[in-house]
Length: 422
Image (cartoon, rainbow, N blue to C red):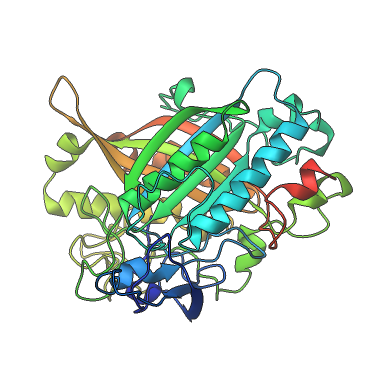
């Protein structure tokens, strides 16, 4: 679900605030799940005028550039906070109105992710730096009909098929527009969401919003893979940008058809709210939990031995002649080698929205998966999981959405411009 914390995502800088940005310098890499931020992360460089206070901590100085070939927030190392929103167009909002909104949103995101204030900024995060803020935009299938662009809707953008045991709430899924806001500071994330919401007035309104969290930079002794709310290390085998065919599996390639050429270098995101039945899960002993997943809970190593990143020996049998990693273990059922190579880049966040009347936690995973085509990524894997995953009895899928995510834009442009003005 998430990557090893990228403590090298931020670098030291002088004192700055969102009102006093001077420049950008440096770049950082990342490791793990979403290794390799799009464009890298850079440190803010500022100068004190005597009243700016002490230098920002490393978390505050980190910048992820908004502009680039791909939108930020896809291969960017997972930040501590994630806010996900689906939007519906207001009645009468046409193509020109949406184009103007995307320009306003893109301009605002470029400012905010650089640590500068944007139009409508209420100074909620005035004392903070950019804190690795990213803002990512997507389009839902219904948008194309509403703005007269049905002929330019990509074939891969279609309703996801139903899966066994789905318990979806339609009010918390789908939408005309999608926005993902991530940052290493909650106030910075809130401030960005508030700016976008004010800029959307008269054109789009929020249909649903969900908030998630991941590890904060520096929370562990060294970069480590994230643990989900079941206590399991989650995200070990995510694809990495350095892997062969990474771009081919995650981003849309050229030549997908003249009417969809605007989506080249974009991607698709599947968003699912997956409630974890934690009381039931916690009733299992540790050994049972490990057999359900196929990994040791402490280290994340396959039950066949080695360390977290060791290859699993799926053919290995124990003294009783049974497979060590059982036929329905989660890691086996989800593995690309058992799904005809189906691959997606998972970048999920945990959530906890209180407790139900029965005392059970309303908590789990905001599943966020990026791929070049859902029919070659999420759909075949989820079908396999739904049929025979030992983890399924401990999960409930409660919301679902699919969006096409346009490529990034250059300075002066805006996300979705080639579609909306093409």
